[in-house]
Length: 94
Image (cartoon, rainbow, N blue to C red; front, side, top):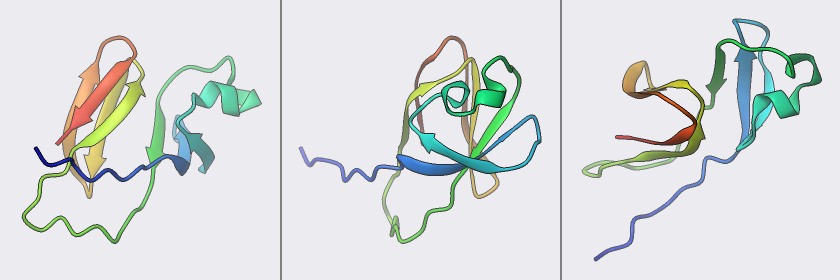
């Protein structure tokens, strides 16, 4: 069995809450713990990150998220890859 190549996407992501201004958030980590003004907030948050330099020609890529909140959608280049609706848990998208 060949081990899969793994590339971590941990680090700085662009984050916005309820359509507000974009700011930097560290992933992994809950946004309520990172922004004092959002500690009591709820609602929709969007994380965005650009990455390049991966040659996936003829390969399958799996995006793994260690934990996602109640409702999550994973988009890549404008295409919905997968979604999740339940408690906080792991999400894999192909």
